[in-house]
Image 1 (cartoon, helix red, strand yellow):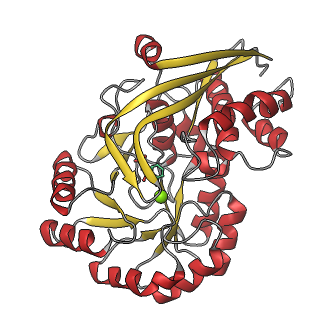
Image 2 (image 1 turned 180 degrees about the horizontal axis):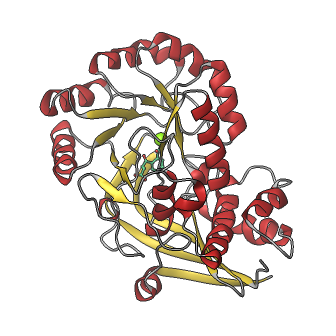
Amino acid sequence: MKITGVELRRIAMPLVSPFRTSFGTETARDVLLVRVVTPEAEGWGECVAMAEPLYSSEYVDGAAEVIRRFLLPALPPEVDAHAVGRALEPVKGHRMAKAAVETAVLDAQLRAAGESFGRYLGAVRDRVPCGVSVGIMDSVPRLLDAVEGYLAEGYVRIKLKIEPGWDVEPVRAVRERFGDAVLLQVDANAAYTLADAPRLARLDAFDLLLIEQPLAHDDLVQHARLARRLRTPLCLDESIESAAHAAAAIELGACSIVNIKPGRVGGYLEARRIHDLCRAHGIAVWCGGMLETGLGRAANVALAALPGFTLPGDTSASRRYFATDVTEPFELRDGHLDVPTGPGLGVEPLPEILDEVTTSTEWIPL
Ligand code: OSB
Ligand code: MG
């Protein structure tokens, strides 16, 4: 495919409620969308970088800059999704920026070929079970109300965000109120150190599916030490930036479960490699999220339909995040989302809504 040009579009998406994690509070998503235009088709890629470099070192202004200044100029005249990864290899890091470009090219390529993301990636299911990530709240009663609402909507698994001072008590309260049958897990976003091992071991009493990323992103060795001191399975998110990181984590015994976020690892092709590697090693994976709009969500849901995704993902319905999504909303049916079947992402941005939320556009001819 020959790319005519690329549009970088920024949209502002208010969240339905503030989302607090150990690294900060989000009240709106500032999203960078990449639209690749070719003579045959257009493709969309949603960049998952957040406004500030708190979850990882990437941030949305930086991603836009690296895309316009280094990534687009590195693309060869003829591209497909695999060629994008190879061409961008010399640029170190910036995986969220690279993922957005590769996803847009893959979407254009698949739309031109009439093939869906799910089919291309190797989906084996037509719908996926959905969990929900519940932020840190001001009080335990507020948390219980939020969890009650999500369970009533049909979510099949609850993830509680935790941090020092908000861990054992909220977990105990949710277990006491909703019982042992609820699939429950926690995510610390790197807020602890190995010195907190005794505190984290107290979570063993609550039969959690997993503890996600308790320690720093660059500390696989200490995660391996911690894993040996906990009964609850350890899952890594921030630490896994590539298949090579996943291989190292598995070899070290730093985790027994991996949260795969395509944006964090440089795209859906690398995400699939991680899935394949984990599957071969008996490591369960699930699909994480970065508060995506319907565009990013469509591809995540397709990925989550691969055979190794044996745990429910953070692939929640549109209304968990936004009053109005930029695509037709993803809606929960019986705790599941349907995998889109149309060409490419299988969803389209709704032009009027997209225009309403757009804060800037930039056209870059190639
Ligand atoms: O650590 O999984 C995380 C959202 C933003 C950044 C990091 C994380 C999250 C979530 C929400 O937990 C996942 C989602 O529902 O999209
Ligand atoms: Mg996480």
